[in-house]
Length: 479
Ligand SMILES: Nc1ncnc2c1ncn2[C@@H]1O[C@H](COP(=O)(O)OP(=O)(O)OP(=O)(O)O)[C@@H](O)[C@H]1O
Ligand SMILES: [Mg+2]
Image 1 (cartoon, rainbow, N blue to C red):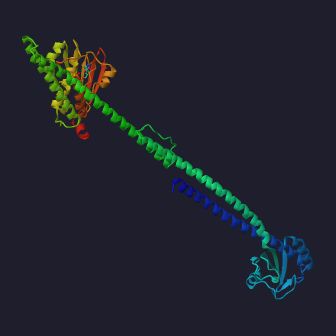
Image 2: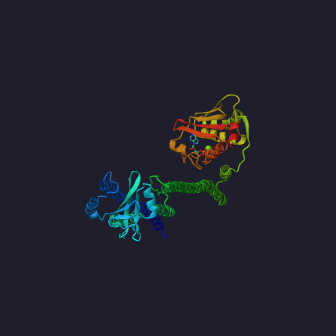
Image 3: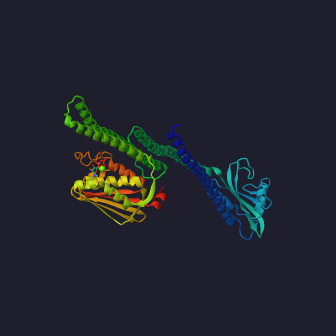
């Protein structure tokens, strides 16, 4: 069965049950009230008869005239009277000793209890009157002795006709509410189905690859919660889709860059080899050509090795061997190695640090990191100054490498961790490689040490790299 019908049935069921319960309760209550008010009325007549028909002081005297008069007045309403004497024999309207009040009622009457009865057609408590009636029997006492019982009766038909009209109205109301119930349950079910269909359509859109779908919802009930979850799901799908695209772009870019980087030395080598093959290179140039080819092949080997290194670091394939050692000593070693290059570029290399600054890192990898950054500083600074500092921070070692070189724009700074990124591709210095891999590897290595690396740079003024390496307690608690 379709959900809409199931819900309609459920809503309709609830509405109908409510209407039926209310209807039955109301009918019973109004029937009861109609009976009670008729009995009250009859008892009122009995009270008047008692007061007026029995003359005070004369116990047996019954003013039949008053009764006849009253009977006439009330005949319009079909109210009739009966009187029974103390021996339970009818004395009015026609004296007949055979007609009597049923014993079970008489017992109560003798005890002074007024009896309110609804007598059916076949009952013979009151003779000559076979109609269904509402009756009140009231005992009359004189000097604590039962002298008469007054019976006042009205046909049930009068009460019932009022009730029938009411029931008819109730039936109309019932029919109207049924129609209203069907309409209301249809509207409610339709609204819920609309919300479900909205979710369904959105799911279809997502299945077709649209990850920008969002469902509006006021967050009121479980379906709204479902819509919120759906929105979150689409959002994460969208993010992973974008991440996949980004990775794919990066992969494509990487392939293009790697091919480009390798093509240059290969083309050079190929050209030189052809020259040698066809003796197109003069004798005196041959040695230079061979050395050029060696340089280019070295560059290719370095490129391949660095790529492999980067991939290994990225995929956690290298194992660090961290230990605490003096960073200053390590930097002094690098300084010595780079001194020549610095002098060539007209740069002064300054190390500004205490004698002993402990650092927790893999020695070789730390040297690789510092060497790369310091080499870059020399590479991009002419006749300037390169200052390296090292100091102990709170549970970490802080290192800075500042130069007064060409600097970088914000846009360039953002990209320097990317592989093959060169701020200015026209700067080509085969002496130092310049493949654009150095900082990508540095970045990965620092991360592997749970450290941080930041750059501040102003074009034409200089660049500062700031590195932190957490100490042993932090690294061991983190990993
Ligand atoms: N100290 C610096 N001052 C100015 N620019 C810098 C500095 N350090 C790095 N850069 C820029 O960042 C780019 C990336 O540096 P990275 O060390 O990764 O590559 P590279 O030095 O060009 O090549 P290699 O792989 O040989 O190191 C450089 O090409 C340069 O444009
Ligand atoms: Mg470099």
